[in-house]
Image 1 (cartoon, rainbow, N blue to C red):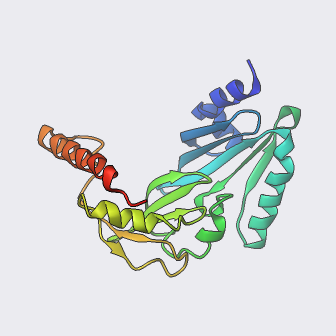
Image 2 (image 1 turned 120 degrees about the vertical axis):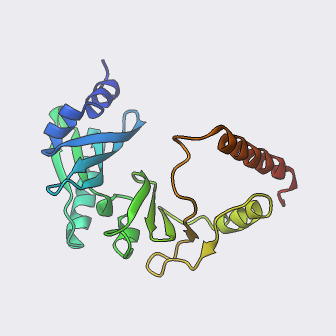
Amino acid sequence: MNATAMYTEQMLDASWLSDALGAQVTATSLRAKPGTSLTASFTSSGAEGQDASGWVRLMWPAGAGKAEKHRRKAAKLGLSVQQSELPDGFTLQWGGVKTDPKLMMHLVSFEGLNDGEILRYNPLRRLVIRNGYRVSRIVTSADPHSTDLYRFVGLHVPVPEVLDADTGTGMDVLRFVGTRDLSSGLSTTQATSVGALFAGLHASVSSLPN
């Protein structure tokens, strides 16, 4: 078994990952760059029974310097990133969402992280978090065309309202709508409505501006 396959199996094993991180954790996603790194999000139960989210990545020997650089950068901000050495020069590194290697510099200035509800978290790529009626999407770098594209979509299907950008990150904020995630418990009527919305969205592609 090669290293990618072996460590993928281990990181998806809650017992192995919990032993490695020294806490009861479960991987909730995993992304592989064969021969380079494995990155996963995880949840853990805190002392008061509250779930906490975080990231963990396994770096191949060539990435050891990169891992150490991030640990030092986080320390200068007063944040803690943990790491341990595995056999054959592999490095396991992990931390809370705020110390995400690609999002950290945005999140240190994002005031809504501590008391927000995490809706989606894709380590090293994006965090979607809700604070009341405001839904913020924190990404590694803002796409200058994303707002224009979003407004175009809004001409063809109903979309959440765009609110004032976050003062800390400068990134777009949308209004939270609905009462639950339709990925579960979807009725036939709701499924039909969702299908009609997607059909309308697909049909709008022909009128995209050049």
